[in-house]
Image 1: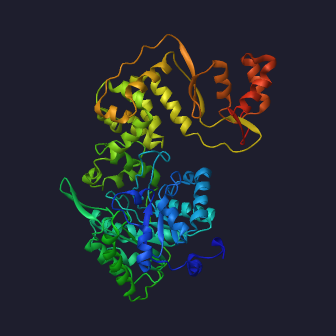
Image 2: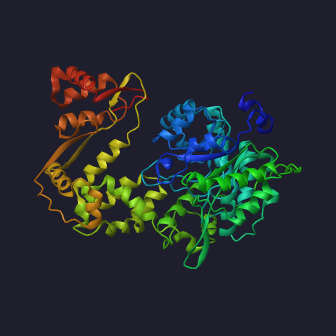
Image 3: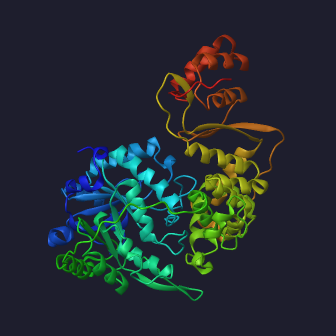
Amino acid sequence: MALHDATFLDRLPALPRLGLGISTEHGAGDRPGALDLLALRAGHPHLAGFLEVGLEVERGFDRHTRAWIEAGGRTTLHFLDLNLEDPQDLDPTWLAGFRAAIGQLRPAWICGDAGLWHTGGRERGQMLLLPPILTDESARQMAEGIIALREATGLEVLPENPPGTVYVGDLHLIEFFARLCEYADTGMLLDLAHLAIYQAASGHELMDGLDSLPADRVIECHIAGGVHRETQGWPWIDDDHGTDILPQTWALTDAVLPRAQNLRAIVYECERNPLEACLPGLREINARWQGTVLRPVARRPALPPAPSPPRDPRRIQRAVVSLLHDPTLEDFPTLTEAERALLRDIEPRALRTDPYRRGRVLTALLEEAPTSAALALGGEPAAALDDFFSSKRFHRAVAEEERFALAFLDWLQPKAGGLALLEAAIARARRDPPRQAGTLLQRAPGLLPVCLPAGTLARFASLSQQLGTEPLAALAEGLPVTPPPLESGEEWLLVDLRAGLSECGEELARLILAADQPQSDEHLVQLARELGADDAAAEVIADLVADGSLVPAGGALVSR
């Protein structure tokens, strides 16, 4: 039955009953004391009916997942790098990698937290995982992403309620997911530990909203341990995936299981704990599920749109990102009054529950800007650059969904000069998308000329040497560096991720830059003549194609 030819409840019988399973993600099994997936399956097969694989497409599967696949174990696929509400996130490169993973894994379905995994692209140090904006507009936008992914993969897509301490919107989380499931015509993954976290963080009673739950659409549940914490006297629950399952989670489990007549799977998220420590929780979940007596639950009527003034959920979400990095922020010039009103309900202390957020992102930024940071710091420890997250430049990058690394290097440029321009060019080259095959020509991805103050290459080489083999450690300690002086004039450099940095003639640089967008062979030959190649122009272009500097590309012809 084609997915677009029937409603979800009509498609439901095709979904297999997977039973009780466990989860993993890249590298989880390599941590000391982590769960041995195959040992659990061999010794307790009824407690390990399937493996939910968390996937970042760029990282792929680790050896533990590959071993599970080779052993013939059943699976589901949980994305860790997709913003469902952002159509641009379903880009061809990511989608090709995701489809390849499906081909290897052969999952029963796709699932994933319906929240914000990243902003400004899939960048190092992100993994934000923020809850969705709980409004009707947000549910409608996210539903479009679910439908697009379902149609692109041919598999059901089950959105999951994410954890968090900051929830923004005028809908209860359960009401939001009820709307999302209806708009997308899908089932859902209900994380019971995350629901307990939401109820506590939002000031609700534990069972609030359960009458709005689309129980017949709950196909999968998650259960995990948690721990109570406090930030400046504000209590919250940390989703630590330990083996201490909180009483609130058990109470919600007992309330939901009898309603979930179409439940196909439960995952115990305990991947970083030893097998013996996981067994009691697995056995208890299994016993409660097996002992559940289903009771009929009335189907909800169609949901009317929630009346409200027009609001842009993605714009609100970006404001939340800014607040989480800079809780003192008070100015939101890009928001309407109706959008700002939603932010006023945020508990200020909830913004401060992750004291390492800025440090994680800064570490990732320093990896791409070591020499610029060293020059800007002037011997101070790297922590001095933490001010970036309170700067107008950072908040503009968030609001405009810029790459954080490029915004950071732009912020450093007044102090770092040409080094920041050079490292920005390297960062841009790393982010070049693959070229679509075609009959035109375009500069190769990872190849980018840049014009800089003369002496920048020598300065880059010198500071790289002074920072040594562990530049992050040197920056953290505050290593003083001595940059060689710049020279008069300018120099053209060629950033080439295949061959490194090299000096480049201005004519060649301008020729390659002209092919930043697809161009015809004839146009590039003519430009080469104008730049001085004369009768050898055609040979120059042929040589650039032969050495891979220009590659066949598709797309619309860009005029001069």
